Each structure stands twice: as structure tokens, then as C-alpha cells.
Image 1 (cartoon, rainbow, N blue to C red):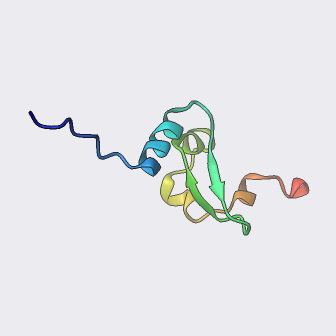
Image 2: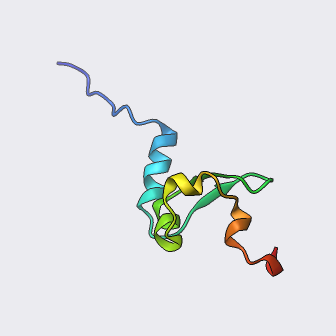
Length: 67
């Protein structure tokens, strides 16, 4: 009898799947404000496409007086 195969889902892809399935907005950015990762809620709430978000910084979403 063959051993049961484990799914080949890595921890990082599992974490990404869990975060993407959540209803909240998740954005990861570095100390310079460059956006490194986001879920689709950022696109939904802002109206930006992923290609546009790649060229933005987190500060582009914050009013200048609050920066």
C-alpha cells in the first residue's frame, strides 16, 4: 500500500492563500514605502490595477498632511 502523499503546498503559498481569502485589506511595504505585496482588496478599494500598484508607494495612499 502506497503512503499517503502530502500536498505540495509550501508554507509561504499556504500563508498567501489564507491572507488572500480574508475580507481585510493587507499590504506589505518596506521602510521606503515601496509596496512589496498586497491582496486584491487594495485593488478593489482603490480602483488601481496591479500593474499600477507596482509603481506606487504606500504614501501615495495617504494625504500629504498626514504623511
